[in-house]
Image 1 (spheres, helix red, strand yellow):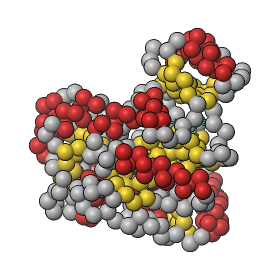
Image 2 (cartoon, helix red, strand yellow):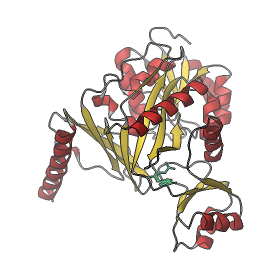
Image 3 (cartoon, helix red, strand yellow):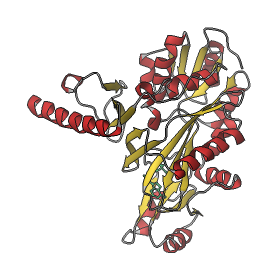
Image 4 (cartoon, rainbow, N blue to C red):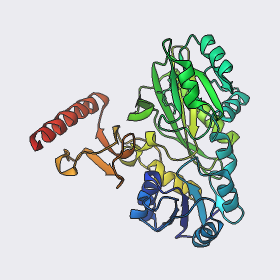
Length: 373
Ligand code: AMP
């Protein structure tokens, strides 16, 4: 779809990703309307927000009337909502992708169909299947809900000492999948963007570190390797197969033997936030360009970048170091345990220099917080 010069983009979901999409789109003359059941959704601080249930067809009709094209910032928007919107407005990426990515099992089978490597997994529908699977994986695994899992939610670690009965009691009642624990050397993500003509551009390989299943830091460009190159190739294959339009992020475990796909996100992604300052065109701008049928911007890196997430709370901005290579992003969200409330990106000319700047930042911040009492 080619939109006119001042397109209005409708975003289903009004979280920080929607907010950063808008902040990237305003300089290009784009306008935004957000739709989110939460009246306090943080994108509402930067643009009009329609707050209603995802099943409220009257509110969805109003939303559609006000926008030219629709995207989403959250892959768990109900499929029925996206399908309803699709009847009257173009939706990118195509909702068929959501159908796959909303269910871990369908997603893994989709990768297998494309002959792409995934770690061992086992669908679980009963306690005896859990007990059998856990034993066959030597009690080293992750039991995950097939649906609605993100930021470590809906995940249960299986260890040799774990009480399987207690885990089953918490997890039962919904479709589940057991994954064998992958002994990875590092986790990487590939951020690709594909336009409607089929051109695919990719950002530098990004290395990610998680705490309790939540992304803590992303660094790019990460060390390149043959495996990383394979990961880029796999991500390209997925985007092509899906005739994808927009930013697609694929997360990988890199092991001694190669890479295994962990999961994909059919949207802009936390591991791509570094592209705001670290790449020639941010993931947010490129997603919008793709969605609006515009040519893509260059994805080359300016230098090196490290992104640190603020989870649960963020220090008062007054006490944060603010040198020119330090870039703070606060999402305007209420602090809450486990909630992503902001991030900071530190940029540098080289990897060693970046490391020094990250260490100096942490020290300066801790000194400043101690001084503030
Ligand atoms: P997920 O939400 O499935 O991406 O899981 C969040 C994080 O938990 C991953 O990025 C890994 O750090 C860890 N994790 C999840 N599944 C596995 C697995 N099968 N093996 C090892 N680590 C895992």
